[in-house]
Length: 312
Ligand code: BDR
Ligand code: CA
Image 1 (cartoon, rainbow, N blue to C red):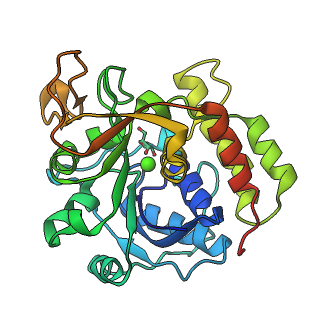
Image 2: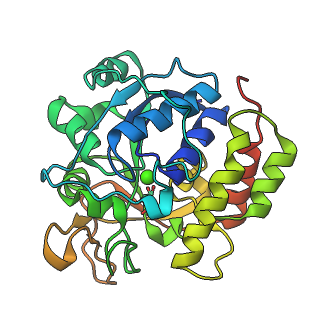
């Protein structure tokens, strides 16, 4: 069983990642850190709280993360992809509001547990703050998995930048310079983690619980958003779920070890750079970038986990 702390900004694929973590018997979800990103931090918090309530897991603390990037800029949100409230057409009930636990509780959780993996599928501001405010955090965590970046492939916010790295490039660059045992899941692989309505219908036929009952409407919305971006895709990529799935099934993908930089300003903002030349110097750091994965393994894992019973 893997103990994980999840940093997220739900958001549709973040919400699927939270459901995947809650339903996966191999994951012990210690806490979720809520931050701005796809939606505001308040909205992200309400969405996390709603998913935890549907799953009967309101015992999992929601930690208050960042409201905005390290630069102090006002964030850009993405209602056209994730819906005005982040869960497509689904809204937490009127008056429903998530309650936050103070950020400092993360240090207690880390002290009290061995062998924690941190998974960050949102903007990297909160994780950068965990590093900056803590002592020896990089040594106390067994591994870090982050969804972000695009290596030698197009970005999804600008021609070269992916959304999580673009949102707070200062934080992302700090992570790639300071963390050890860092696994990066970039668009190179996550763009291919396509889930279709056939997959969703299979899950709905195999399972019936309040958490899973909302996935049909959420996925319809997400697919319609992607249909506008990439006509004919016939599905939509669950970037954040692939990150968790690779963490649990490391042999499902292939990594390369590379030092990484994230560009900070101007046209290059948020662009992830690594040296892929034959004559590149060997990497100094333990950063592993996923460049390929077994799609059929991923789909089978997704369907198996999502159709698992709640509260096992
Ligand atoms: C990433 O950006 C967000 O919009 C998604 O939730 C995912 O984490 C993809 O670029
Ligand atoms: Ca995300």
